[in-house]
Length: 493
Image (cartoon, rainbow, N blue to C red):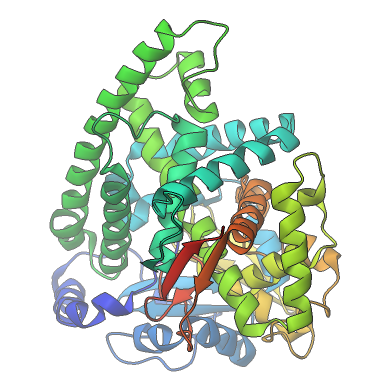
């Protein structure tokens, strides 16, 4: 999870940052000052008090890449009082990402960012392992069937969100919000229950998306303030909203479990694969399942939605007409041929479009760790000691932009210059993170991106603006766009 400061909230934060950090440095008892780590260089462009926050906000991806090129693969950042050691070089990431939890703790790092309050203790300390087992298990059991069910679900979600009544009226949407609703609706349909959004739950998509957006904004603010200010002022209000959301989810889950109990064994399950696994195991109360559900929806829908949008936009921005024609043909095959293994073909232009888009839009800072035991890491011929208590952040987009890994034109979109093996190397292509905490949903996410883009190309006409806003890496997600992308969507006859 990144601690990126959003441009939308920057001006609101300046006074709080200056006042809060000043009070903190002058009066608050502090732990060991890791800014005195002498053998790890500072990133360039450091300013008093706010440190690197301004340079980072202006262009996170290129600032991190520039820092790597100027000072090396490991360097220090000061984000308005929040100190972090950045791991930007591939071999160093191999070492840190494989370090066990007792030495470099992902759970403690996430908790330190405030997620104990905002997402809950269960999601911080046990949710990831539970979700990983369920998602990987269901996918590997029968990927062909899963692909077909997700295709049907995404198609239905698109029809609902466009209110396609057969008259093919055009609708105007913020593209990213539109696709986000589609993917969230589909995740609920497949993972939780196709009936979850019935019976008074019609506002749930809006409620959940608003909660997640507020959580991300609050995390960006809280991370640059001392915890004694951030917790009561920012984190606890979000916790209260989460508990209210969970209460609503709990009530709905009880209704679904009762409905499932009344459903004949010969009929299809009322429950989606994720919820059915929790319900069958009988190891968790409904209240606990509700908290875990917030975590799985938080993790499962937003980045696939962003990736889908970027993949579609990049196709029109950067592909040749010949490439677009080939992608449309492949999309047609993926949408119409239910028996095909085409979705698993990694030689298609559609697949390369997906992976190349993800390479160039990866998180600026994604994986985080807290050092529990002093850890020595080698990088570029030097040895560095990461001290106990230090915060570690691993960059992802900078690996995808490094000429030493991807060639001289690493920053360019290129569907022909990279071998498939390069995208399979999680330390070269690290959009889905790497090591012990590599994203378990990568195979499913890549299929969802290709399916959604294919459905958009085959079954809808989308009128894009003449000029698309540039990429923005300010959010704790895949890169988005600096401004909303307003589109007109109409179903094809």
